[in-house]
Each structure stands twice: as C-alpha cells, then as structure tokens.
Length: 114
Length: 115
Image 1 (tube, rainbow over the protein chains, first blue to last red):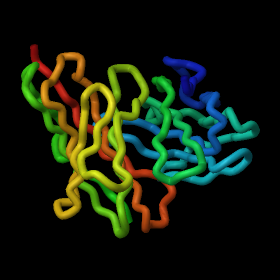
Image 2 (tube, each protein chain N blue to C red):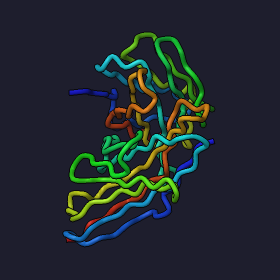
Image 3 (cartoon, chains in turn yellow, red):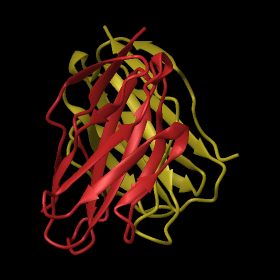
C-alpha cells in the first residue's frame, strides 16, 4: 500500500521561529509537492520537485524554501514563521512516468503560528 | 492556461438521494481531469480520473463522473448518497497541450449528506 507520511499532524510555533515540515514517501516517486490549504482558497502550490536536488517555485513560494536531498524525502522550511503562515500543509508525490498520473497525499500538518 | 471551477461551495443532499458535485474546466488542449476527496483532518484521496475514452468514468466508493467536452464539465455523481460521503471534494485539471506540468485544483465543494 502506497504511503506518504508527514512528520507532524499538529504543530504550534512562535513568530520568528524556523520551522521544518518533513514529508516521506515510500513509492519511489520522482515528483513531490508541497501545498497549502486554506478555507475558501483550495490548494495552492508552494513548491514542487521533479527529482532529487531539483525544485521549482509554485504559486506562493514567498516565505518558504524546500530541500530534496534524497528521493523519498521533501522538506518544507519556513525561514521565519509568521502568523499568516498558519495553515494546513499537504505533501504529495507522483510518479514521473505519465503526466496523467494521480497524486498521493499525506495526512497533512496543521501549523499554528502564534 | 488551465483553470478549473467548482461553482458550489456546499452541496446538501438527503441520504439515499442521488448526488452531483459540479466541476467545469478551461484548457487549450485536451484535459486530464481528476476528483479527490478529503475527509475531516485528513489528506486528499484520489477518487477517479479521465484521460481519454469513455465519457463515463467509474471510481472508488461508488462514485462516477461524466466528461462532457462540449460543456467543458466533469461532474461527480453517485446514485445513492451515504452519510459517510460527507466530505470536501476537489476537482483538478491538467492541460495536455499546455505548458504546466502541475494540475490546477478547484477551491473544493463541501458535501453534506443528511440522515
């Protein structure tokens, strides 16, 4: 059974802290994604990665960075957390072969920045 | 450019009645279309997709979707709703002819099935 896991389900941080959100997939997928989900706004793409050490900005990259040193792991970094980054963060993966392949999502991390 | 719209924020239906969750799209080439479901405090789960071929696509949990090219729609349907179908539903599109490698998601529709 395919699986995408995220390091925390709930996280509370303070303004200005550096925050790491980790995502691991066990499906040997090349593509990985970080989304932010807010009520009424749907899913917005923050960053995605085609493959190891490759990354591209999505629609809302400001205030975020990512790291992909190993194929199975894709990290999202909030360099200096702010209250407007309070949100649900979803990680997803997808195999490279076939642009019509569906994405596999993790359970999400609900981040609160105080 | 690719885009997708889910015109209803919320759909209410009685248990046992048929349900429809609407999705319309805009692409320059041929569309790849997806439906996902999100239960409370969970990630998204894939339900079904349209790539090519039959306009009626069958998916998980008894759901199906009808691709209509002339109306640029891909509505999600189920003949008889269950209370457990209550969730948030997302439609997504990727344009085969476009430059984007990434699907675009709609804003989501909350389905509430009343006992």
